[in-house]
Image (cartoon, rainbow over all chains, first blue to last red; front, side):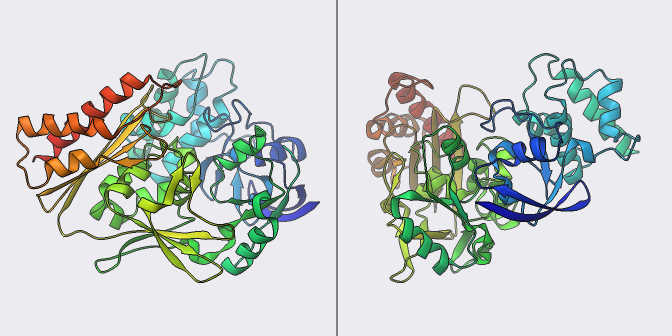
Length: 156
Length: 279
């Protein structure tokens, strides 16, 4: 059986039919071709699938697609305004805060969620907020630096 | 993931009816951070999944001096941990909630769900045990209250009957209460507890100690509590209480730690907590 859901996806209202036994991550990737969010562990440990639901970062691999009904969902694809990148996307590039890039969309969405709630966190607060996102190649130093560059800009 | 029917009722009556209709083949979906993984890994194979987040009254969180703190079933761990009343009156509960999973998980997961899973290592269970919390439960025969002390029956087993739904957790208010939550885990963040403890001091003469991950359910260290009653927390007394706390623990060896390590950590965490509670 398929279930009708209506939700906002990257600022657009969408209507969709989905099976109950499909995760939100799978629906975004397969039905909407939004492949920024990735499946790493499938258990909420690695954060590669992080998206914003009602402004808050969550693991989209732990939500059923049907639970998206009525929600406002933003994925990494919804951050930029056409060719104009979000500040976090820019600082991740300028700081070289990625290598293979697999974890990057999740990293940026978690950081986005943090900065929405607290535009000027301390380094320690950033580290705590990012603790649910694993990177297996770059390490975390440049990722933290990229986020802190946006924080510094927010202070001015 | 196997197929199942998804229901999103808007009342407790309706939700309970579906749960009773499907019996053992139905499962409540709340935050989903545990359920979705268990379904995906084929540990659970429900025919019906009942999403209770459409029930408005389960989203409330309130505090007043008379009734204490009431945390609705669908209040996320992060909303609860940042709630003004929780931070002011029950920081020990906020501290335990802040170490469950990651920020992303805490935006979905709930304290009621954490406890309904009845995992022996549920971080938020220890402050609730130490503070004598109650669960407010919808039952087809009429709403009831279950003491947290009667709620955990075994590993992943609670005293809830088919069709019963936890509406909220209520923690009584205390005029003078200080509490410390501590957790030992393999890594600092995003990990399950190898051992977790909550030690509270009430009215400067009563010590309560709750231990997680050292028995089939979270437990209170009654022997140590009895010994501590009315005593000044001198170095000697603190050491003795911490040693006695180990006596109620019956841990097992597993991937997170050996039995011996767990017993040792009970003593260490309880001692450190008591040292913090002296001031």
